[in-house]
Image (cartoon, one colour):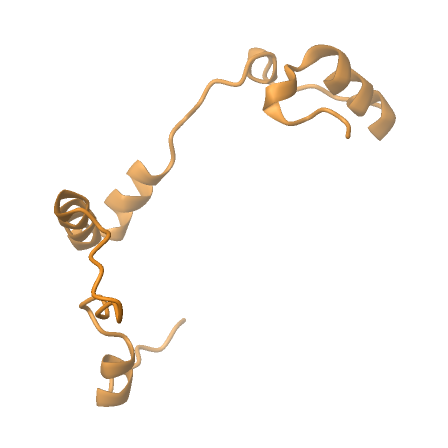
Length: 92
């Protein structure tokens, strides 16, 4: 069980809630992006985790519940012959 550690003045000042000023005076982050980020940061962790991952269909890979191969070489050959290159399973 993790013990709760009470924040000290040192840890609070080491982790400011406001972004540091840009020494060059640039404000590159659009205001609407910053508002969205701050709103997301106020959400509970459970909600943030639920929306953090997007399910993306992967052709061929998602078409079967599982596949089993006798050797790594068999697996690599299957990937080479069956998967689109853009999925990143091609040999280099």
